[in-house]
Amino acid sequence: MAAASSSQLQNIYYERKTGTPRPCYICNRPTTTVLATLKTEDFLYSCDGHLTDSASPIPTPASTPGPSADDIKKVIADYHQREARKSDKGDKDKDKDKGKDEQEKEKGNDVKVVDSPKSPSTPSIPTSSTPQNPTHRKFQLHRHIFEMRKNELRRKEQGNKAKEVSKGLPQVPRTAF
Image 1 (cartoon, rainbow, N blue to C red):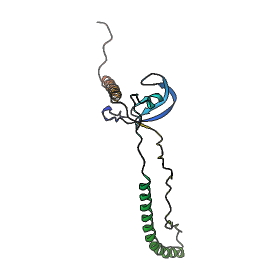
Image 2: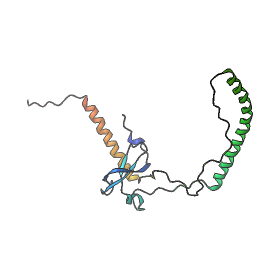
Image 3: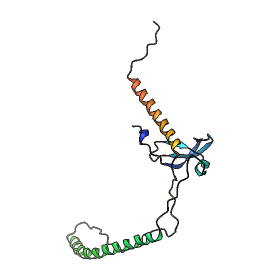
Image 4: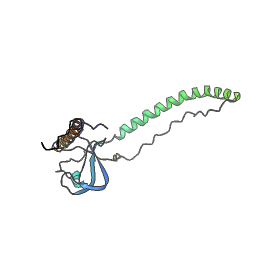
């Protein structure tokens, strides 16, 4: 498996919970909260206090406003219009399909189940005005901490490359002259 390059690492971390506590990256207290990148290329443990504190080097995520009620109404209206158009076309096609289905049944062919066009139904959109929270909160590290993380990953990659190269080199003599 190829290691991800630290230069391609993005400063977007998601909060997750683990089963075993590990020391916090900042204060070394045991914590079960971990911040990890999307593909888990990099992760660091952080106390809940560091995630909520405004003076913390890990800023709290900015809340993004959801769509307004007007936007939702517009989308629902557009949806109903499209469904009405589809059902009009479906009624015409339905008449043609009925004749074909009757001929197939008379021939004794396998009976095919054809779904009738659905009548326009209301989409299931939550009526509450509060947007749903994502399962994992999104964080962005302070630029200095992020640079430290990138440097650590770069050092690990260089160490792994050095080990691979050293496998092809001859051994150092261990006998005395």
